[in-house]
Image (cartoon, rainbow over the protein chains, first blue to last red):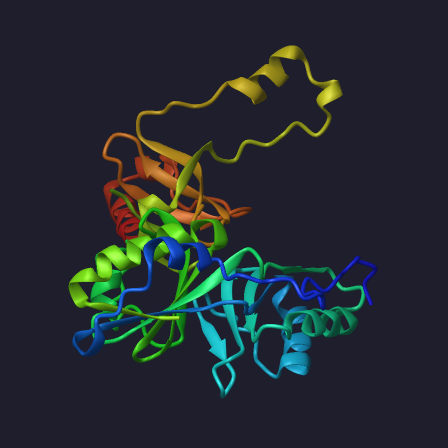
Length: 211
Length: 113
């Protein structure tokens, strides 16, 4: 076990917890286009986000034992478990993003630390710093095409890929977990901006926001 | 706009994701205390400004956030190659000055990189 100080960021106290988009819902609302909608937008708030840093070989063994997933070794790859709830994404040659259901991140971090022992690594809990937006529907790719500088054509962006790129001038991770679903991992501080951008850009497709 | 190959991401990305970080292969003197003022001043302040092949350091600021090196032609702006930190360039001003046949081969590689 490493001697790093850790603590569970989720408290038992009954304090109200708000998603990064709570303010946006109040200020900008959540448009409903109904049946004519070609685009669905949903925030998956309060998930557990961990950043793993270290050598691929050391981390791979620990991640496989603890999480049951292989660490993606190739650039821009995304690995998910069968349920699609837990995922690991390559961010850089020594950095990976793990997303797990909310509440699982601290036990996971503890187990990984125990497993890795005195190896050279770092784990940071960034759950409070970013949020995950999910876009789906037939116009999802069209929306991305007018928003990101990266080529999102299926030939360049197959399922199981994830890249960090520029999304409407904000740094955003764009992932494609399945054929018809795209995920954006945005900074908490940029969440309102990205949300309003998505509403504006999605207006022509009749965006449907699911809260 | 440049379309830059990041050697860590293994693909071409838009220039918007990168920042230039100045001349590459500048080594900090091992013993600064033992340097003359001129040596230290050269290390700190003086940079090459060639007309032709130039080795630069860039960072993939929005992508993998790694630094890497780029060989670039300062007249044509052509990116001849990109390579990881710690590696040596395969295209240099000397290799470009060689007879045409050798240069043509490395030019082609540069376009691919």
